[in-house]
Length: 379
Image (cartoon, rainbow, N blue to C red; front, side):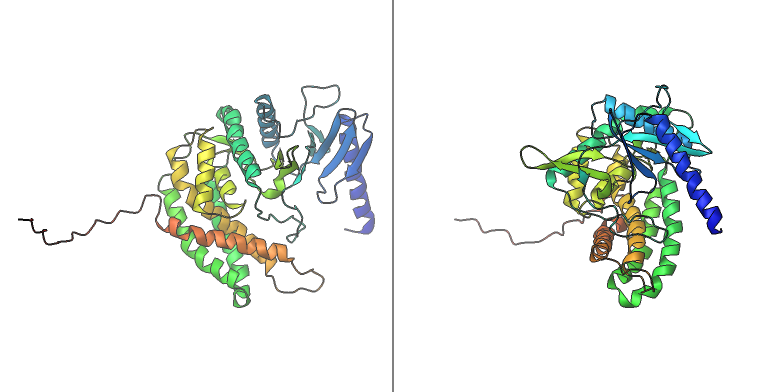
């Protein structure tokens, strides 16, 4: 593309954004781009602060409609930490505008700051990295309970015909495909990185084990679908300091991956992306969640397998950036990125024993008989 064509393309894109902004907020007092999020524009008017989003080319309008319906149901159920959906000016029933084939919507800005920075680094192509982080206990409790209430509020939407879905077997196939490419790219880095070597060994062992457990009962988690967030990361969790000085959950954002699917996908993210996998963390997550939302037995039983699939793919993705070979003109990854990669690999390793057992409890060992002489009776 020559310089003139490139400039024309940028001008056309800017004009579409301006037209979309005017369609939602004709009386905007401030419009500002978001440097960390090129598809977002911050807009302010008399009603408050909003984010105008330009959705990627080809993004299914049905999924945007599902996201809007889920957000509206959640807020109607009293879940105020998710965004409001803006309507077009003068057209209160319309929440999407398409300009020259590009889809736009707008959602309210929420208070607080992200639990973790969204751009501690970039993947090739400028995609922001997803990094784990450990929240304060009160924030984690709020988050688990919010997800449980979200699932209850939005579950009725899953019965609609043609609702976008994300079944577990689709997750499994995607992880398999991603893992093959990651493995090829990471093998050359193994000689200089113990974390890469651990990932290569563990993922090759655990992926078939997790797949066997999930493929053995593919219908077990379809009975009670929810509308899941399916991208729960610290960068999508907003927190702010309360009056008593404690930090609390103030926002949950970025619902781009939302779809109908099993609740265990969100529970796996809660158990692994926020402090790393441990038995205690998983039990805390399951306990708080099941106190507010129904969880089928298969959800509890298969949680380690689903968590392992997620961590294998996410750890491999982060390892590629954290331990890549030096390249001229490409900045070296930060220590935060390397720490995050190792944290995810540690989670894979922590799950190895559970995944190796399969989806049934380990058989208890029979107690060996011990023959002792009978005590002598006193005479």
